[in-house]
Image 1: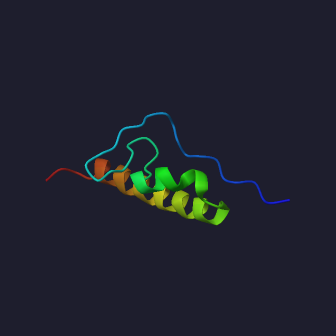
Image 2: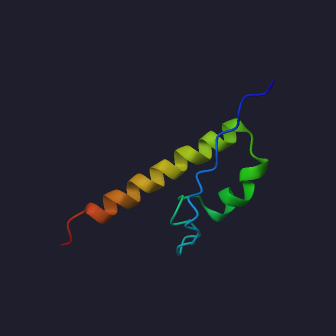
Length: 66
């Protein structure tokens, strides 16, 4: 029996920014369209990249303005 696939990170706040990245889940448009055909390893890779983008976005928002 194959392993359980990771769940989608979608939070139903679907809106792409200027870089074609969703402001809700931080997946790129390419990652969103590839999600349903992705195996568990590919999904884990996507989730890792999403977490990195989210952390970068949060750090950018908290950085003091010069």
